[in-house]
Length: 181
Image 1: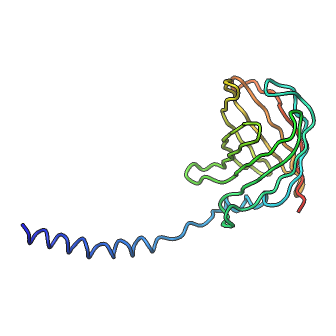
Image 2: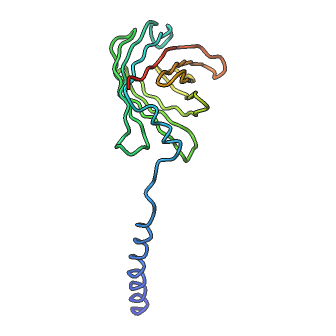
């Protein structure tokens, strides 16, 4: 029995370096073509929009600036910080946009200083980015969709719509984002 244990331990000890060498040979993950498309978001932006009156707040004009950069300089995720003002006062936000190759979708995660937090999934078709989500605010669930279209290099128009049932949509905000660099 002791001989079998000694042989087993020796085999395991011989296999560990081989397993570690195999693990070390695994390629470093590289950004995909879909990740590379996110380069268009990197830079400084300024935006303006018209917020429609809704259960989420009063309507009125909004303005903001946004600074977007590659997270860690690697090319997988773009992180954007924003500051601005609107009908409910000054605001700050943080957003992350990336590509999830496991699901085959773009994802956006966001938070703002008014307490909003959200996650949406979307796609890019031609010059239009489209994101959808199911969210809740103030205990009320709703569907959200957000589309952005590049109308010229560095200029995006967008529409944010919400729905209680996922079928009848109401425009919550429309606006324009312009890249400064």
